[in-house]
Length: 331
Image (cartoon, rainbow, N blue to C red):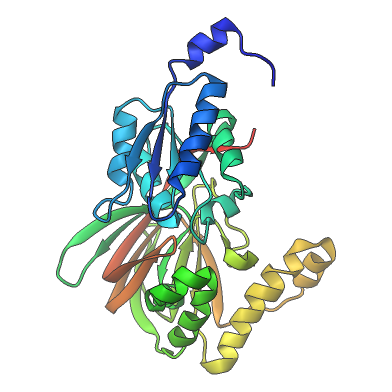
């Protein structure tokens, strides 16, 4: 790497990063060593260090980093930490940098970023380029009448995924990571009932529907290279939405075949795309797109955001905050 000029050193010496870290998810000594090396090489000031807590998983820490003048905020933790830090940074213009931790790294997967080495990811935080992406904003109602608002980056919804996450046994997830969800999926599939709901899309006419699962995605890839929402783009100002309406075991087979075969195999080659053009629609699964979605449920359902459980909700309103988050990506 070329030596820094005096002028460049002077301009960079005023720059400062902040690290928001989950102490349970990261090797703090390794992280501090990598950050110190990048600071020294790039001529930045010493970074701010802000630890997450059970009460605040990163939102308040990210906002504090912005208030303290940070130029970039490194999120060191699992998907929950990344989501919370992004919520705190939304609309600020301060870049979010991703570090490898946890089991999912969902946002990084959808940005085609490979997070395997801590030092390389820290170097990227100090030397990458910035791009803007959309953020999903959800306001949901609880059965007790309370209302909450949160942000998400990848997916939100109720049904199979929310029940799977809620059913995941902590001891298995700690030992096996995403493999633990196989057990949770098996238990979630035993609940075959649909939920009646009233839906309004983009402020249009309210309609009734009955579905097992509804997922709204800002981007489409899940762990295991599962492409749930194949047309989703992270900066197009739209949600891609999928609903599951299986009728018994055959319906689940059709859904799984659609996601794994068509989305996971056919779409990845020119020959496959030609074959796909002749595919018939699967009745058990439907896709559509929207900027806003308003849903009233007939009964309380488990809800999830970016792979984290958020308890039961009775209604929710989703909207896209277009290009509201800056993310540090490879140059």
